[in-house]
Length: 43
Image 1 (cartoon, rainbow, N blue to C red):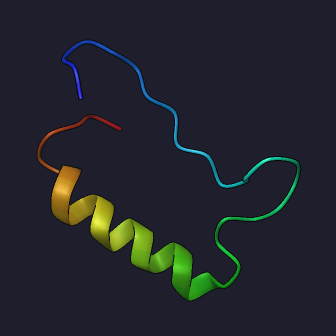
Image 2: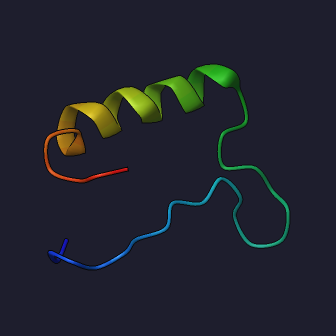
């Protein structure tokens, strides 16, 4: 990641296929996001 740059996180793959097929997949992603990026990025 580069300071001052914007990044977008998507919840769909190409077309309309969901990346997070189940709620627990999304919760896992959010936990990992908080663990690794919570103190580094501003969301």
